[in-house]
View 1 (tube, rainbow, N blue to C red):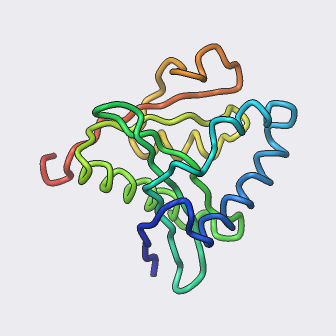
View 2 (cartoon, rainbow, N blue to C red; view 1 turned 30 degrees about the vertical axis):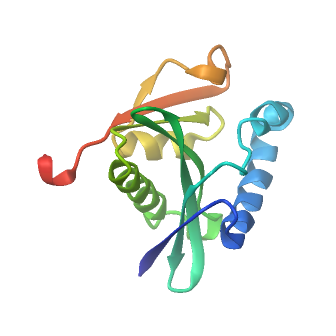
Amino acid sequence: MITFERTNSENTVFLDLVKELDADLAVRDGKDREFYNQFNKLDSIKHVIVAYENDTPAGCGAIKHYSADTMEVKRMFVPLTLRGKGIASLVVNELEKWAMELGYNKCILETGKRQPEAIALYKKNGYVQIPNYGQYAGIENSVCFNKELQDKQEK
């Protein structure tokens, strides 16, 4: 059974998962890693989800204020040994739910071309590719997505 904890970027389980994420990204991004690191600081993330499978940390993700109506999805990760169980989709859905509770109606995000499983995850969950925004504009390795949020009961 998957459960969720709402927390912030000071949570030690989240920090441990992010260390695993950063190690994976260091390999995937290579020389581009330093550029991306500047946009992944944890000090101002107030909305973090940690997923647990029973009592085992199974994944994480965060949302960060981007604009009046938009949250940016950050720091999504599921350990390799737990992938393929739908945990990442559950985390994304939980982040979207939280964003709506906070009064936001859109989520945006950036991922890398060297992360095909992340691209597939976001497309599967209704995200649409958009032109690279903000600091990612003109960055060849970046792929940006957007999703308009709506209450599932409204559908």
